[in-house]
Length: 384
Image (cartoon, rainbow, N blue to C red; front, side, top):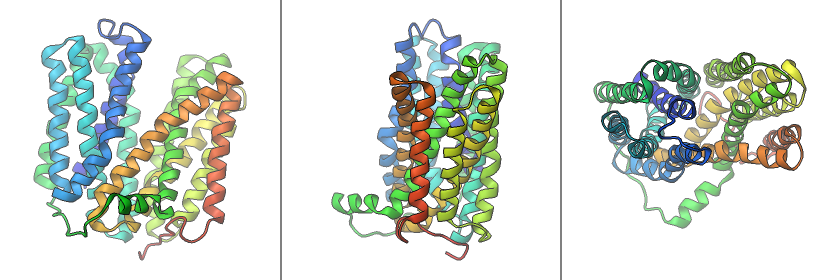
């Protein structure tokens, strides 16, 4: 499992480590906000398009080859900019990194599910989410330190070495999980399966959690600045959000495996906490910022392992990669849609109403999780 945790860390660290430092340390390549936006969108855009494709490929040829291929491609894409060191190659490297992450991220999730029995998947996904959250947390901090010491080339060098090292580790330590025979699936069959509430419920919860996390990271500093807080205080609040999400995930997964919580109640509680955190962001000053950071972190930390465990439990083993790729797509859409929703409402009214809009969405999701019929979500317990 450890190489899979390292793969989760790699994609998160690579995504946020570069994204957080492009605008401040690459004047030759980032000449305008439009260029910066394009560079940031390249990585996520590649993931939105390719994650379902590579997830399906993992089911066809096996998840380990796709995992290794993605990690090697990530290392090569990172090395491109190290060797070339030009603005044009920065675009190519960023696109290559996003495409490579689209391969090894859903493959790692599929292997987490395939290598663990149902009764231990909550703990497994909790640990996987913990190390991925650590990557998100350390990316801006450690990435900024590396860029300060040696520029973007040093950061890309570290990412190239990291990708190659994790690929070698996974090749040696991760067992081969052969693809399973499966019945032919038409596009209509796929559409029906992805439209099933058993898939849509956890995936929607994961999307809302990712949307709230993205909004918290992006807009809580804005609220803090408006209240007169300095960059250190607002930066610390964002760190609290990421750290809380990281710490909660292993405990949430363990509670699921031990039968102390079910996916239905856990996802409902996570959405309720997330909604409360977004509502807390409407309060002025440091109190609102810290309350929002803590509750959003706790809510997303609860939702993430339980959502993936629910999907793994309800998915045929031979379709695991496809499901994880589609679920990752849902998260990416939440990652992009959450900030867009809040920004649109804030433009028409104020940021307070933007937080309220997303809080309402999360609260409605919590209510549906509680009152929905048995098929709405997998009410997984430790024996499934």
